[in-house]
Length: 286
Image (tube, rainbow, N blue to C red):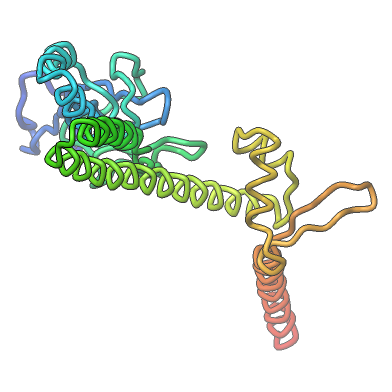
């Protein structure tokens, strides 16, 4: 090892150069840790405890209500030590190593977020996870509705107004819970379509502003039917429009992307023309 200032030979134990006195820079070694990703949704980060997810808590409450607490207690004991993906709920024991990171250094693409979904783009441009499906809320809402129907039926048979009143309250809560789960599912679908639309626009920019269903299906790893639905949804006749070629191929054109490409080509040609005119003027003056 040599000094970076004067080139003097240094030993391993030298803290400074004996000739020029420069401090010897030493590389700081950081311990590495494996960063895992979910194989189902692509979430990158760390798993959370099983009952950190609202859907699992709702399921625990529903089981406890139907089994007088015994089933809920057994369910909690069986699953309390498990860890799951915070995005989709898949067991974290099925996760796989995505990359190696250093503590104290930001993981690429994570920024201030806890985790990210990795798609066809690099980790430095990773996207946030999709909203939850709300399946736990829907299951709990259906369970509460069935329990409410049972209580109301018993109340009418036994002429117990208290059972009817309690059943009505539980039924209203179950309806609200089920609607909450359906709203979460719709939000997830909208977020998924927005993500697909953005990927299609990025693909259109790289392809010059024209795409086919096969291009979208191949590059975004979609089925032909799914790619066709996405392009048909984006086709509004203005920003995205479809045209049939002489060979019978449906081509989806993005006029704004094509116009932007033409402007870029015109600016480059204009700059080249201005440069050639400057050279000609300089040679004429010479």
